[in-house]
Length: 156
Image (cartoon, rainbow, N blue to C red; front, side, top):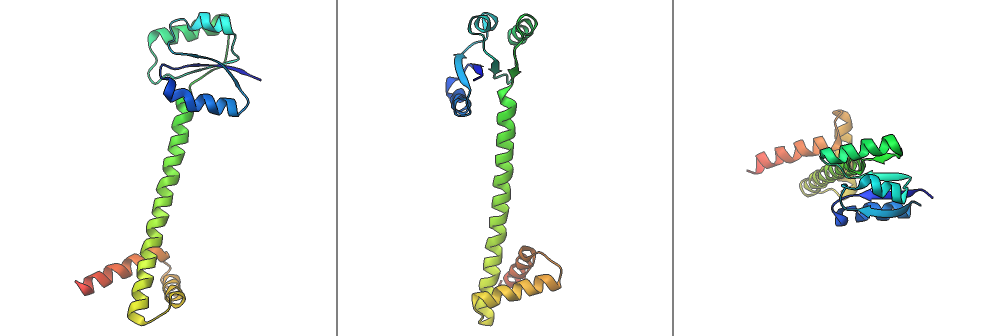
């Protein structure tokens, strides 16, 4: 089991990281709040991995990392990069989900309009939209959007 030392001034922020490390089989041996005595802590605890939160590393942090790496090399991981990539991925998934939901809503409205205007049931209205979209080589959502715009111009 790899021993991990976390260096972060905000305990609350690093709690999920600590739990994730434990859940994945790492042993978190220390959480150091400041990096002033990083070298001595590493010498004392002998972690296999040191995770340092460095949004904007100060000179002391960088110096400690260099000295530590020269005398007693350890892998140093910047947890901020991993967290950033995770949030970036989640944001991307959320945007995609919202887009698909918006497309679904416009298709449902267009289908409702056809049902009302043409006296169709839901299945026939959907089939009519789908058939029109295929004939025009358009996405169903784009055709539905055009249909709703045309209807709003006629009603207004």
